[in-house]
Length: 455
Image (cartoon, rainbow, N blue to C red; front, side, top):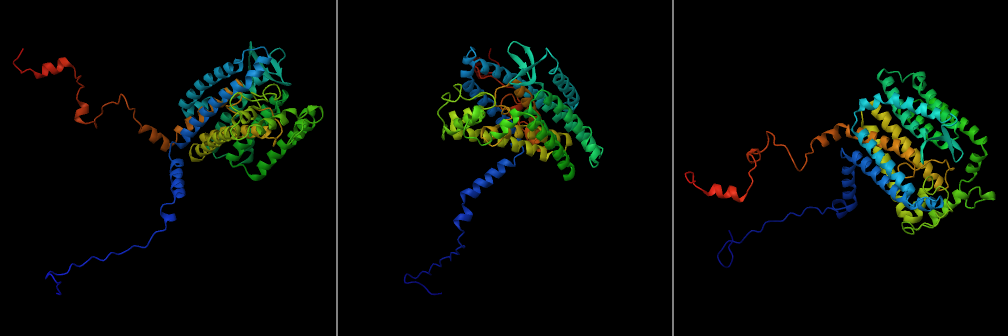
């Protein structure tokens, strides 16, 4: 072995094997990591539960704030207190919160048992609207019942909830008996009962609520797997009836002609639609500030009900309107996820019906404010003023929460949770946890320091 000058054997250096360099874009790409984390978050079992609960509460709270801001001028013009409409909406939201909590804790069997009573009650109340002396007209629509004082109720809003629950129970029972493959079992009695509800609504002239009810009907048929010919046939009949109702009403024809209008037109026929666009256009990115709307000072009709989204755009700007849209999109996604992941047919139909109801109503309201759709006179769900619309909607949100909790993975995740305080000591606890708790007081420490024979 050759030696060095010092007489010591030379030190053999280890050969370093270099690995091929991994491109940084493939190894540490922040967008891919962010996408992976977001995908994991979306796939968690409680994602739908949190989206429904958090999204609905945020929409309701923001709606209360905007109702207070948008309704002050209207209340003062009516010689009422500035917080009059806000107090009524807050009372309705409190009652709705109780309904949401009750519905979210009710078992699915109890929801199905309530389907027929709710349908019967809704039909009875909608028929009472047409009785002289009981029903009352608001803005030309005979769809209200006075409860005394300033409180009124609109039974057609409860008809939406009735159709969802009853239709879901009916289709689920027919699916269990394998009857949905026959077109007569798919249509009867679902379509006749839905058309009966539509007839009662149209007797009062409420075209907007009739459109929402029609959307719920089509959503249930779609979820039931209706053939394309059957679906197109029912859609054609509904479209024909809608065209006839619009053609025979000058008011509805005038609303249809205001789509995309930028000028009030002769006789200010498009005044509300145009001033809604004015409110959105003057908001900018971050708005003029909460409470600083100009259009609500008598220029924009129904600023706290049908056109509250326009006031939101004026005061909170593009950021506020996009936030509202994002909350509704998250709520719709969570509802679709609940309907798609369940094995229970009733849960699938009911969750799909509620999601169709809230999404379609939000699209129609926002589309009318943006000038893309005719003004249908429907409120923005959970956001606009109106206790009759808020109560059944919050009960429907409680349905979605209950269904999200019933998912097997979500149920297991909730069962694994334990409260931080007051945990029960089980058999798996340590010996220290199983021992009785000793309070470390001065008297006990003094007693422990004494010997056994000392007194």
